[in-house]
Length: 440
Image (cartoon, rainbow, N blue to C red):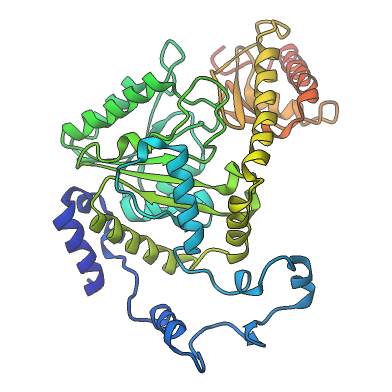
């Protein structure tokens, strides 16, 4: 093993031995080179005042070389904030500003040691880093049965972990914390589990309430008390889009410092929070350990970044930082939130109106971009296919035999009634054709 990796492992073993047990084989072996091109370039940037012949970019007139056809479109920005490589951990100021934003929006994190957020190439990249660092073949990834399909690719296909699913809702339509607890305790023999908490949930648009949140945290603590090491990933992709009386904070804060066997990791980003999907700017933040442990995990994270993408795109980090610092940012974001909330409220009003009879019910939703219909008699895939006909021209996502996910985020409020009218007529068409659900 490389001495740098061993040094990081020794630090984690001394400071937080349970965290060392959580690391995958790759997680133990990875490190960020301290003696190499990046470190020597960083040293030269500070001291080589005459000529810096280390950097792998081209310069001209004291600035990064660039094409006028590009810079003319981006003239509001200095070339140094666009064309140079961003540091592997991301622009330092962006990391600090995002941390300040996180603490402001999540007061429960205050007082707990957390790492400075590390910039990722959006949230999927952050999840991939977690999978590399903590998931080995056969490890359990515990998540509700209504989940984003990319978890299977990221943790299962790439790393060989096993998806352990439990029902998202209990009999009262609330988050099924008891089922989460049972799924976790079933990993007693393995001694380790990775938990994914995704609120607002994709695909259902559900966020638990405060009492449910406490039950989730208690279930995770019960697993830790039982001797199970638990890596808890809060996938906060849609954070802030809370339209009703649900949790308005990430559970990351409640999990920080809860137990030596619990490692909370927050994955979030500007992608959906700030409506910049194509910018691909996300963050990964560790909590709950000592400062030395958090620093060691940061070095291992940078090792994964260096070995995969080297660093994230610089221009989009500059754009996001500029927006976060703008005096108009909060006002403009509140305006977009109001639009999204109005769309969610309109959907709920339509579905509660009785207009669509008994052909479906809907899963509880109160946040995010999506909601899910539960079709009672017809096959969801058959309905999806029918909706694609020229007569309807509607796209939706079929999830299993009963569930149809509808993204109200991308439909203007005045058009929502027409959308659900079309979906309902397609359901009636499929019913008339006899394409019922399997087993009906």
